[in-house]
Image (tube, rainbow, N blue to C red; front, side, top):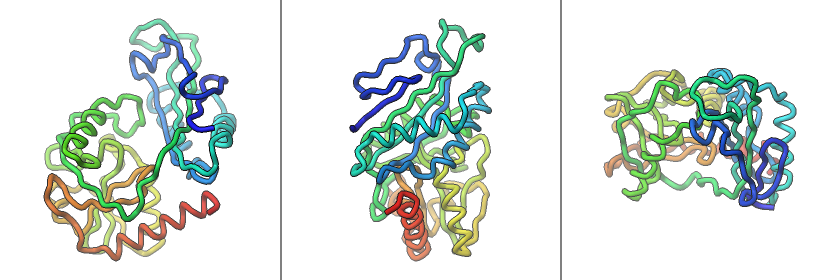
Length: 281
């Protein structure tokens, strides 16, 4: 089956699934989520994503008491019902619960768990990205994977209108991240990433790229960098669960990078090998 969903114990197609109007995800976006790619019947790096999911629940003060093993069982059951020959995206979210609309936390309610697997094609390594920049006007909870994504939705729309693949947010001159990705650069042989503070999401692919770089003896620097540094970097990278490590070709219509393809290609190669080994290919 393709496009299969789960909600508090019920499993059916996404088209048939319904949720209560009073689920706090509906009118407050009061919840957190996570997602990872699916290939060959396996959810990639599920352990890392589960770690981040529970951390997001903690930071948003959602008392999600469902045992980790039980959630993993549900998610693996969904993936098991999905067509093994197709790539997909596994998504799950926890809302604070179901209660009449009121801003303060409702008492005596249990969090809701929603999940689905739908068709999704991962971005191949040889596809370069064209991106635009946008002032980052989001709140200071970017390190929590919340359901509140309107700034990212608007940013993605602006990129689409300009026939681009992604945006790069910046606060003043400091680069933060993309609408649905992390942004890294390669400069003088080192992989450079902004710190995982309240301004960016601690991306799983970002984490993997840092680990792989250290294994390859590529220096890793965790430090803020500016738009000017981004434009002058040897390479610019966009990474996410659906795009493990893509080279950025243009920013606001200006060519960037292209000066250290060797380091970039090595990272892409070893990440591809890591992914294939994990999913059993």
